[in-house]
Length: 548
Image (cartoon, rainbow, N blue to C red; front, side, top):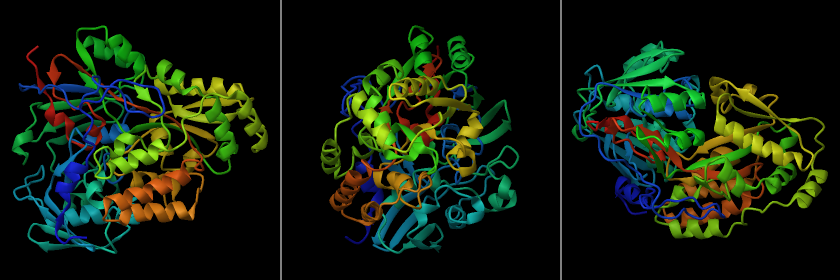
């Protein structure tokens, strides 16, 4: 590859750019929605506001430690606290963050030039040592971090200047600069993190970061309050809200009432039932944005009869996805052919190759009960009801799983729905002991960065944290590694496409839909990004008053 290739400029053009004008909800074979309904941003908020109250419909976070967060609630909060080395924008493009420049000087050297003048909330300056410590603890087993795999190719992380950190790698890794825009690339103060120890990121241990808001208070079971960082380094993103209060509201009816009354100003992940009620009020507006979310039905462990791909194929054949999208998601979704929604690579230089490969996948099956019954007969016997998990209080999840339950009955498969408390549901994704006795999990997952190969690797390679059934296809692993390590975008896309052909038809997963982001704000405030990029950007810093 060419020397001194500055990745950030390339990543900005390789973000998921083609989203502002896309819209509509076509329930077809994964086609892009029609124009006019989806937006990435909302009108800027112009005035200062003392307080904004925001709901967390998935409940209280278990942690705000950037190394450990991997769910909706913690990411919604933490994205406003801890700045990342590169920054995601509302259109899924990337721009400089704490690193003003990210450069591959050769295939084994990634240089991060840090921004001068950045301080933590306590006024101390950001140093290379803080960056090194934040990255190194990702692969320290004591941290129990979720994203250590991003450093698999990194051999050393060292300070190479007063404001410079250099990563030496075994080879080129196109995932690394993209990952720096996620919580993996968030930087905390070394001294504070070491002193807090295992309590870092908890209600007791707190955080020390550089973001536009600082952690004010965390009252377990009640709420989290963020306070404005008046010394924030990014003068173009000085928060207008003095305080942001997060409330844990997992019941859909309670959430709807709070939004209608103005008790809560807004929320992401607005349930369809709430959207229907709020669409009739003049108190605010529902905003639809582009998303990389995927709705999947996944076995909880390898021992379950649900891990048999033949049984999953049978379930896939009796689920009417068009009806699911219409009745459960209010039409605000499209069908899904594989693990990753097409929006993930929309702005990639090799987008045409990705698109062609996705289009060549078999169409989403039409319901075929007789064919499904034959597959059930061939699969491992199912002598008991299959236990399927969703979060308690999640009306959308309950409706979707009830829909699947009714379809399964047509082929003689009984499904028992188990509602887990939000914290238990969140832990389920990372703790095998929580998945014991769970046959199926209805997941509302998401791709956090414009890189399909790294997301898929977590589900279909032996080292993947979401590979709960032990799926292992050496050729898939080899191709995904090639997609990750190729410096040629076309070669990377080709390798991913070949892997996609293999894992799509064999990995034990039922692909159901990709949903749009649904967000509500009342008319008192504006400015929140409408796209799913909010998960990895300081979205609350964009909020401001409207004067109404």
